[in-house]
Length: 151
Image (cartoon, rainbow, N blue to C red; front, side, top):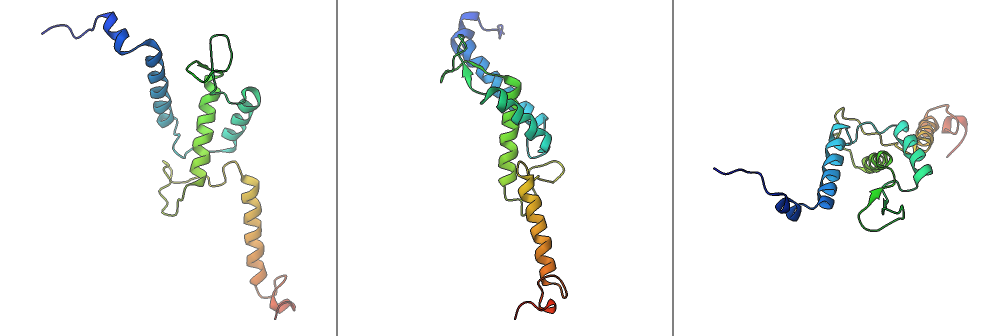
């Protein structure tokens, strides 16, 4: 049997350096995404804060730059690779927060999805409103019929 190693000109023809870099980037982000738990685990306020710091400094850190450092629509180098990964994690957390988890599957290891990711204040206000609504219906509670309100 012959050698399975291809001559360099064949490898360059079928796998140009640019496409290899792109494939490696996609593979790395996929692998790191699963290794780092970019399912719906780990969506915390800390993730949101780190994303905001990157967004403040770089705008879209995943934007490609050409060799002169100018924005390009084609392939180039990302503004900041680490911040790009933070942005991707943030985007994954945002989509997880919107998922319907009525069956409790959630796509997480620990089974918990942070439905309040990036909107904790709204969720806190919603919980307070639910508590107030419960009090409203209790006998003697503020606004109840027993307190003289209603029909």
